[in-house]
Length: 151
Figure 1 (cartoon, rainbow, N blue to C red):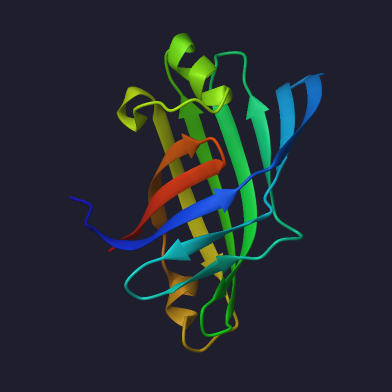
Figure 2: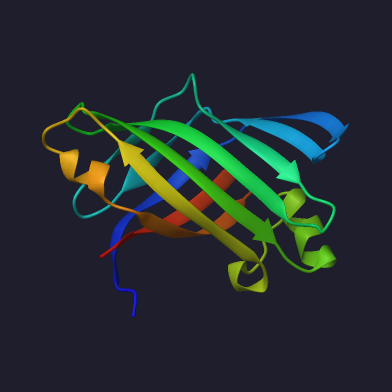
């Protein structure tokens, strides 16, 4: 049986999404991540603006594939590269509301991520050797995740 423990809650600010249109792989969008915050028992801080984003692909079967890269800065000044892939899908009427930024019960659709981390920080070096999972909710300002370390 898989065991987990809470790592942090992360809320990303996504003010803009660029629609590239229908590509051979599906409907491609790129979302700008302009900042945000994360907080947990063992680490907390902010998402650095700048080189951060979400490369989204809406597949023909309705599944949204996420490819996200962020730089986290802890409240004590350490830098952590966070990368995750994920999937988001659900009933068409629910996903239409999610895509408009309307409030939706997160249990009414599937939104999961699988983060990994990379850091030069000695204090947070333990992140280099863990896998994590997360459950997401799409808010009007951007996604919010509950992230868990897999033990």
